[in-house]
Image (tube, rainbow, N blue to C red; front, side, top):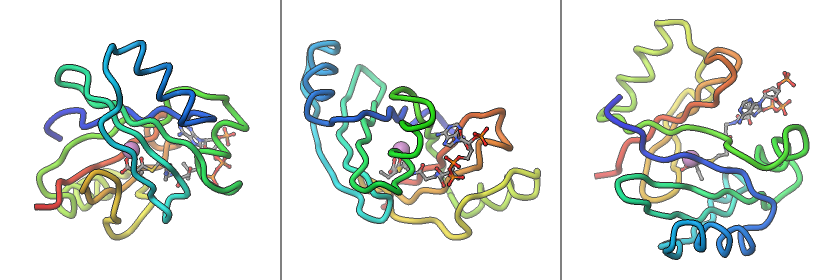
Length: 133
Ligand SMILES: CC[C@@H](C(=O)O)C(=O)SCCNC(=O)CCNC(=O)[C@H](O)C(C)(C)COP(=O)(O)OP(=O)(O)OC[C@H]1O[C@@H](n2cnc3c(N)ncnc32)[C@H](O)[C@@H]1OP(=O)(O)O
Ligand SMILES: [Co+2]
């Protein structure tokens, strides 16, 4: 893993959170993207070298809707940039981590992604991201 690619934050309303985080960071989000396969609307902020992803549920069975119902709004996952996602998935599976998808899937912002079950990572949902070249 090379660096943190983004931190994902679950929010109830993308519109009001875009305003809030825009004020916080002193700069507006640079992108909004729906990822229908995940049941989410996302927006992205660049804060110096760091990227923040806000996530709003688009359907009741979205992971974000379920997370907010149980834990409320807040940090939902940490995503790490990897060079070769398939190699990293193979390495982590061999180390005993539970992968939530067997094949990389299309994420937001031009990435292939894979998630690790938080039960195997001390309660933190981890996302692997590889830039689609
Ligand atoms: C926009 C695309 C992409 C990107 O490009 O960046 C994204 O970031 S998409 C983000 C949304 N997608 C996902 O989160 C996909 C991966 N998540 C899942 O597959 C599921 O959410 C899950 C982690 C397997 C949990 O699903 P499920 O078992 O159906 O839900 P429960 O609500 O029953 O939770 C079980 C258990 O897990 C705990 N949990 C759930 N989410 C998280 C989390 N984000 N961080 C930490 N823990 C989490 C939940 O609290 C339950 O624990 P217990 O109550 O103790 O059993
Ligand atoms: Co993410």
